[in-house]
Length: 289
Image (tube, rainbow, N blue to C red):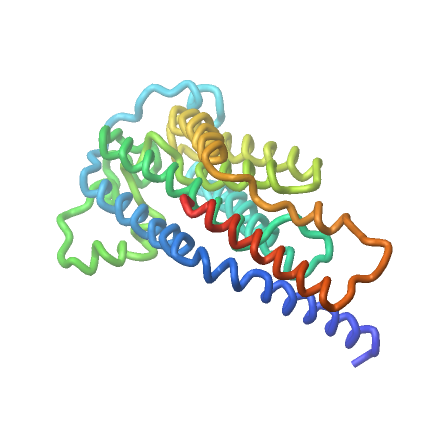
């Protein structure tokens, strides 16, 4: 192995190890909130599966978006899924960039605590809305004549508990009023808007959110009202939660400070203890996540 490759690998390993030592105390303090947010994703899926049993197909409702936006067709419905997957993966990778890059602004654990708080709050509202009113789904597999449009009573509890994975996830009906994909997309875009550093990426992310909205309507996966409700509700949820929670620590501000004289060992230890104390305090204050 060439020398420069070994040196690069060694530097990368040191960065990863250094970041792990910073993130572990944060994880020890806030793992309950992370676990709760992840578990709620399953509860959200369970609720969406449950409303499918209540779904009754019917004529597609009159929709201005369906009149204005050409229909992609059943074969091209995966385009919106591919775009969503790219947005999801890009955001997830960005949240872990402190483990690799020198310039860093966020803490991975803290950012995911806040993201899951946004998601849970939005998904609670979504569950309430689609159980309040069931609309005939516009998606192809939810229309009259489709075998998947209605579900027979479950044969066992396991069929409900395991969501009939993956078929039950891919071919759900009845979970309208809110678009789940738009919840995730808007949460990710709002988070990067506030904590990201690249202006052109922020602008491009909002553009992708608009394109995602149009593709969902063109794929007939949701009514236009589902997209409109997601746009103003998710942004409002993010705004309200940010008002309640303290500001996240900004690592870039600390990184820009460079003392003219090197710190002594005692100073370094004192600085490290102070930083860790402030971080743990920040996590404690953001326990509402």
